[in-house]
View 1 (cartoon, rainbow, N blue to C red):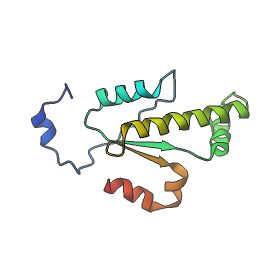
View 2 (tube, rainbow, N blue to C red):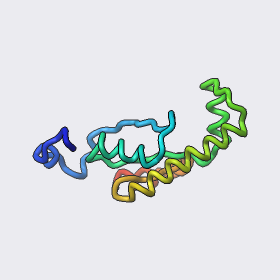
View 3 (cartoon, rainbow, N blue to C red):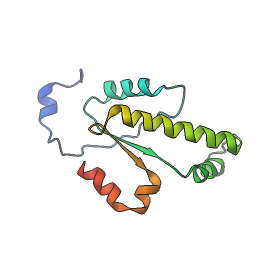
Length: 120
């Protein structure tokens, strides 16, 4: 917020979607509370859509096929579970006014999930 004056922030309608930015926090040794601190400082007026995937087997196959992921499948599945836990903890800590947790498998099969995010 230090980068923006209150007048600059007030001139935008609170219901206006101004942009979208992917912020990847799955690399490195982030703790979810450190990630939250970073997001709040870097994007003080933002709301966050936190995307997870419950179909870990599908993610593992995709990473191994398209990204030459070298970890054996059991280790990769364990990492994916930890990654989801990280994102769930972040969403819970940020709270429903700032963050929405969305599972890719849900919104791919039900457009109402995405419509709900737009209404939010």
